[in-house]
Image (cartoon, rainbow, N blue to C red):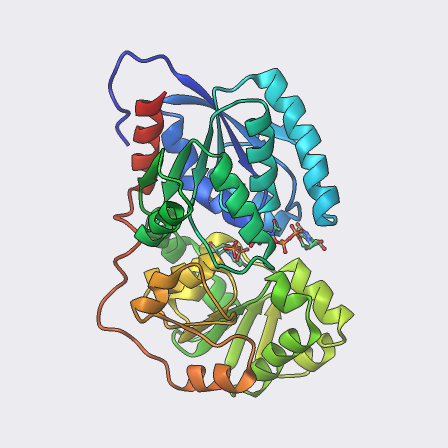
Length: 366
Ligand code: UD1
Ligand code: UDP
């Protein structure tokens, strides 16, 4: 990107990341931001396995974190509490003029809360998303982050409308989705670098890709059991990169043996982003409860079946690329057997230059 030209002093921004989708969102934004700002990158350590964290920094060329807080896993209170304490220490010593948070994880919540208490302005990337389901931890995190934020970067028009309904109007900007930027930017690299299809002996268009990690699915035996039943009986090759939470809960509920015994289900470790793009683009259908994966299915024009009862990404459903089935095995099987492929690509996620728009707004506002 060409940096906005002006004689302005460079602003000091502390960006806070911690979980897999935040590394991917930071990939297009962090480099662009460094053209006009001095960025301090703080990794909370919420995700820490190499294949949930380091891989993304390496393959997406994300700048190394300046501070790694090593918080790790725990209950919401423990994890968020440790983050609050450690982020506060860093922000007090670094004295940034702006704190940038992404999405809706506990790392987002902690970053926004510490900055709000220290009276440091906050920018929220992926503001305004709502599932209207307060049982989701992410919904609480988003609401708090949005109501603390000074600059709210909305990926979609729906997100802007959600904020308007909550009386949040100041600092709200429709920028498009940085995940769309990333999906466009890394698709070519994925095509040339990834060998995942060969490694797994997969034929293009001849398998279903599945991801599951939402607490509402993993932590409820009957919901996770419903998904397992659908995967076992769908009669197609299913590639299933297992989030560590899901691996743990399949074992805890005694469902792992059921799944491993199904010859058509390929349980694999979480993959890097480039392999994931290749798996997504060449799948016949994607089954998921992930926010990011729902959108990527839509970006790459692959029919998506969402294993939830609601979605914050309503445009994916409205534009015909996504169907909601929840964990009901019969509904999932019906959706896999009758894929719907709209004639038109999705248009609701911007022009692939959301990162540029966000950097320009930060520059103009500070
Ligand atoms: C978190 C976010 C969720 C996001 C997801 C992206 C919250 C409340 N949830 O969910 O919004 O969609 O990240 O993937 O912030 N674990 C490991 N190794 C790791 C990380 C996690 O083994 O590197 C295991 C631990 O057993 C941990 C569990 O996964 O207890 C859950 O991790 P956690 O970060 O608490 O939540 P996620 O389910 O990953
Ligand atoms: N992803 C990945 N490897 C995997 C699973 C997912 O690179 O094994 C990527 C996926 O392509 C998307 C992001 O991780 O860009 C989504 O993260 P996740 O599903 O963990 O969280 P959510 O988007 O639901 O918050």
